[in-house]
Image (spheres, helix red, strand yellow):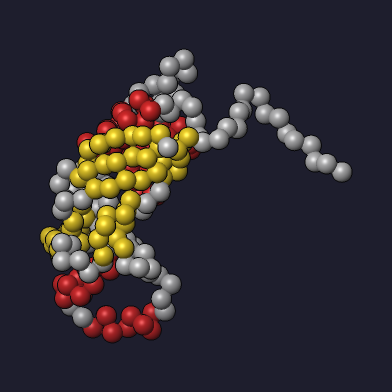
Length: 206
């Protein structure tokens, strides 16, 4: 017996449009990948005996995002979060939809692929950048303790990614504006927007 298709009023499922987006970093970008928590603690027991600053010096390259071939990339999830934040900063209301802005549409209707930077994990152009930072950012800037942190820094940087768009309200013009706001006022990866800011080069439909 054939299953009945549920029809939802005002809902149209269409093939998503795919755009190739090219961006270029305004200055440096810093990385801070979350450590691999799948490794047993026994493999890390010796690290507890190492001074924190020394540990940062030993492990800073591990904070890069890299694949099985050691190719460095910026995750598509990070790009998407940046675009959502850019749309929120813009705050533009969707014409004819009251106070609804583009923020929710960007959040639910876009999928981004990774940006590959054309660098290997051990490339000499990737350098350590260190400073004193909040030991517990979740408690805010006044948490007290400061520790020395090192991040992998890349400058210059840029690349292309594919953006799959599932909602027709996100026209090329709207997308260009959202990306431009995200690059100018939000940025990608760590210690942004001082680092990680970028400019839009082009948006091309594929």
